[in-house]
Amino acid sequence: MDSDELRASYDQVAETYADTFFDELDRKLFDRELLDAYAERTQDRGLVLDIGCGPGHIARYLHERGVEVAGVDLSPEMVEVARRLNPGLRFDVGDMGALDVEDAALAGIVAFYSVIHIPREGVPGVMREFWRVIRTGGELVVAVHAGTGSVRRDDFLGKPVPFEATFFERDELVSLVEGAGFRVEEAIQRAPYDTEAPTQRLYVRALVP
Image 1 (tube, rainbow, N blue to C red):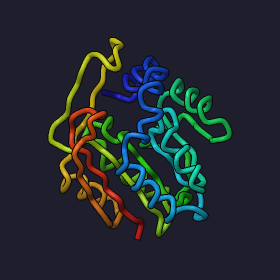
Image 2 (cartoon, helix red, strand yellow; image 1 turned 45 degrees about the vertical axis):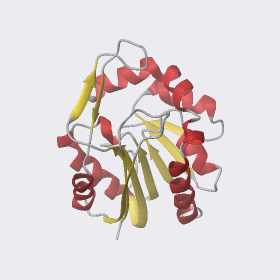
Image 3 (cartoon, one colour; image 1 turned 180 degrees about the vertical axis):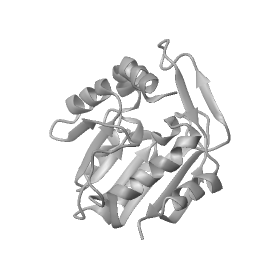
Image 4 (cartoon, one colour; image 1 turned 120 degrees about the horizontal axis):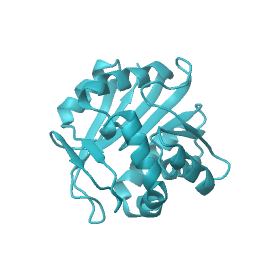
């Protein structure tokens, strides 16, 4: 999917997506523990961006734990939903491959299930963009579906809109992150929770050295 197609799909499902996923962390102990630890390491260190923020639930979770955080999403409709559901937090329309952020301006980035929407050949450029905007010592966390290949459907959340996701093997994602200049600290794969789509989940945590 190109960015225009992706934007159009999420614009059409923004409300349904929020209804489905806004409280998903309540059912994901591992993700909460990972974000709790991330918050402890990044609070009082400056701004963290939630990339592909959707309805803003990840940003909100970090904000509630003392992190200065803002969200960015390609979909204007999703950004409007995030602003409505999280008053007082900042959400902007933006492209993860060309962030409107100065070099080394951020304490970190979290990107939960947003990189999956980038064609495989475009991921190295996205990782380099993440590296550009995070300062030395800052921390990146990327979450994706683990596996090989990709999946494309012509419906998403009950609506006739296209959906495509790229899967990544552990060594592949680690290599992509390291290739951009990060130092990978951790790469963890877990089984899906009963309430999730039946795919393995992969999390990579890395620092700008």
